[in-house]
Image (tube, rainbow, N blue to C red; front, side, top):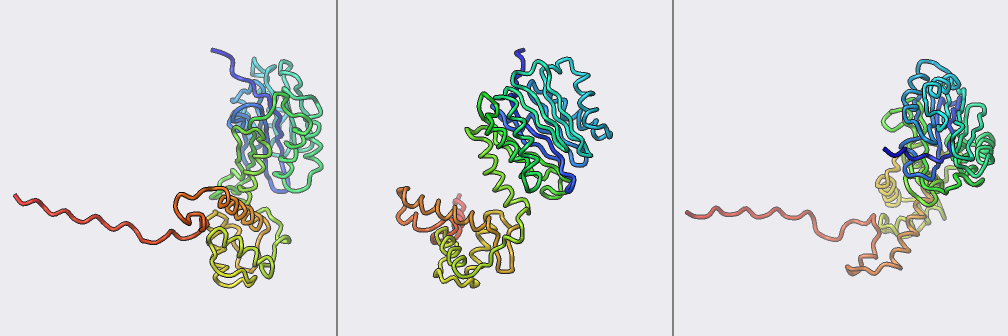
Length: 333
């Protein structure tokens, strides 16, 4: 059998003590890097396995971390039992935030790592050591929570050249006890499997994930819905077919009903409010959707007359459900 492909990759594993969150961010010139490199378990730790990736490092490493072994001990155990270790690269952060990395001597240049307090950056087939150095500095200096810092580290690494073969896929994984959908521990799991600018696409997808699934926005940024903002919302809701009244700027019952339907149909129930305020992210999202709808109407030739006069939120034209088929008469014998 031919040897498995190498994951020329740069990644960061990290732990946020204040929220007991473990996370990994990774980018590679390889398809679906999120399916191979990142492994994490709430209360246990996080692992990145790359280069000539040994995927056994993921579950076996988590099992060792679960027993209370430190990140350096886990790295020693995994690599010590692996005859192919010199072609591997590994980053680990443990339950207490201890971090460690390993770069085998046969990893393709440039390959190396940098370990800091609560995190480890590692990469191979890179433009040079500046990639992991920039990742570490960005993680240490960026404000916000763990997710903001992980994404900042990826961007910083790419600005220094990243994977010298180019870009293809990226992933962001974060775990926290009970913080995920339905109370599971997988807080964030976002992947871009194939894209010319995977980090930017990862950020775009994560922004939607953030709006839909998380509650990270600062309440201090909430906007009162009145005057010009109310009129703008009415306009955008009107473009999309959710609102048919005048753009008065008065946030009346019809406007509130239209807005609630828009929010619900786009799965942003966690952003719904009853205090006359709105999150800036929803205002921006609604504006972008309305602009896209306006552009569609000016560039698309309608097949059905007046098909472009109504937005996607409008009720269907005429008619109800299809009538039942008439019962067939039995044939006379």
